[in-house]
Length: 299
Image (tube, rainbow, N blue to C red; front, top):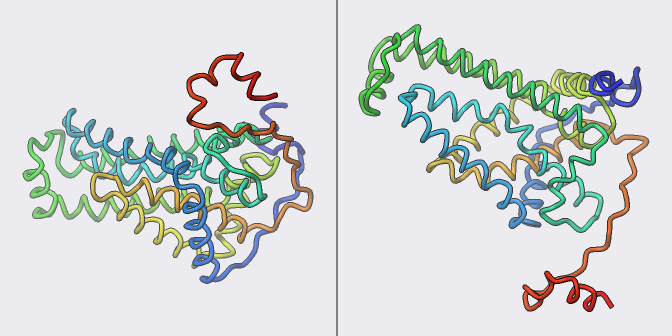
């Protein structure tokens, strides 16, 4: 039963969500709404998205420290392959704001309450597998052109890549293969994670819906992919720090793009009641940590 739920959700033969035909104006509107979400709670978003530049710097340090310099670019580019899964918390913030709920940074972890959590995890693992496969392929392409000898210095490595026929082959083949990986991930994830967060469906239903949305809007999705690639490139400079803004904007915008690509659920899931949130003041710290003070404040 657990495996069946991961695949198909709560129903063995679920009706596939209805996908829409959208226009370029919808991309512009989705981006505008994503920026508006970022402005609505930037402190929450920065708390979450600071992970991205940190991970980028760690990846860079890893490659420079362990003579894996040739994999630095594939690592930076491939990090976007798991971006749709890493943005789950951002989708949840946009979803709850859309419902008119009071949003705090804790709500970014509300995805764990989704009825399709197992499907989210399964699809996330699939993206991790694709990322690992991309790294293996990128390494094989480099070895095919330059052999096993590592580049000792960055200037030497850049010179070999930019000024030799082997380097030109590496650039063309590597970017071509990388494009295929990116196009595959975009096709299977353009709406799949927001859909799993929004409805009780399985991973297969989510992926099929994402593929159908892409096939119905091939030009629009291609333009969206170019926008994502361009913004990620800009956000990677300098030292990946721009990702602290680019990633949350893209995450929020993806949620709104999902809303445009997929018809609303005719039977939306009900939100569980939330416990009331008590306002806290700085003057209460650290006294409010003690039970006696807590009881006095609630009277």
